[in-house]
Length: 104
Image 1 (tube, rainbow, N blue to C red):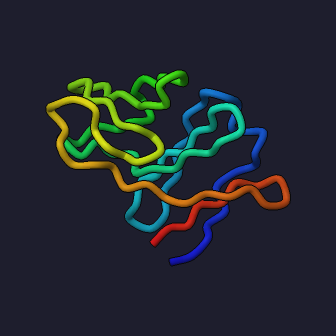
Image 2 (cartoon, rainbow, N blue to C red):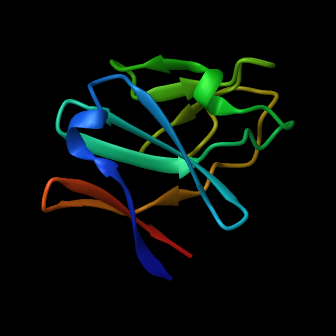
């Protein structure tokens, strides 16, 4: 496991979804207010890229564009079918104006 530099903080305007690839992992990063959320980017139900999904800033969820499963950004837990498996979430931090994620 290692801290990976993702992007500058100002790239993450509130509600923007940022894609990041690290080795074979496809990562999604977003910021809502002052909190950074980092999860896997591919829906656990069927292969769909969540960066093209729908962010709900109030509920802090991301909705899959394919079958509309919603996932909590904090925990990765699906909120409705057809997804049943949580998204992997990653610890994040801000250091020297950059966003880092702890990727295994």
